[in-house]
Length: 325
Image 1 (cartoon, rainbow, N blue to C red):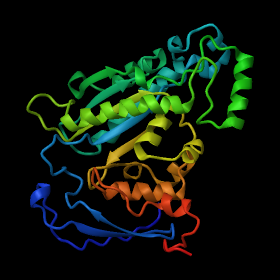
Image 2 (image 1 turned 180 degrees about the vertical axis):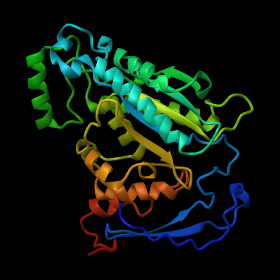
Image 3 (image 1 turned 90 degrees about the vertical axis):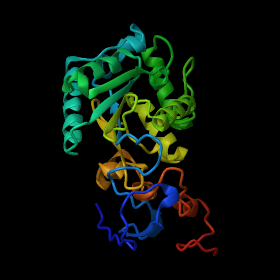
């Protein structure tokens, strides 16, 4: 990860309500990305979020299902409905290992009151993934779970014809991975629309603290979303407002793999709180997207990035300093 020089120009670090806070700090980020970004950062640190609303979950962990029968043999899709395709034994082991990794990550926080809450696609392979992943947690650690149909896999059509699907996927690469709609199925753009609805539900759940028991305000809640490769990429695209071009450069992470959105110093979720630059580059993030993730680390919910790097790269008449040429 590039070296960053962080200079805090304010010494007050005590969390206070927004209406009573002292002026926020200014943090200057200098990086090897040939940019200097100066943005306002919350002074509340990484411990708590100073507002009257319930504390935001510490993490949103995106988990792709373990290896499925369809991952091993594509002909399965011709005789078994996609929602009914289950995990292989290897896939069940991958899911169990993922649960162990999640628990180890959470325990490193040092908190004693941590919990997890699960959202899961209703497909057999995702439900089996959650069942095996959940072996890592005792009942008191599990705050709850919700089966969420909007997290289902992209619909490729009913009882897929193997040869026809090969042709359709080749055409998709020519047409564009985001907009191409499979016959009797969906495009990634269709998935985007339903994920937008799920995101609004998730945001409302976070804002009202639906994961908390009455009277509790636990800042050490961790949300785990168990879903499918494309669906999770679209979720990230929607959450971080990535462009179609940026989405089409992303790669699936492996079966039983995870991407972690962790709460940063201002209360927003950043991939760079857990992952390294190089790991995210392999996933498909560009330098512009990494700069934005640096901003996400210290920005507050509701803030806009007025130094958004996408703006400068989109309008060709700006020079490197953002001035008109």
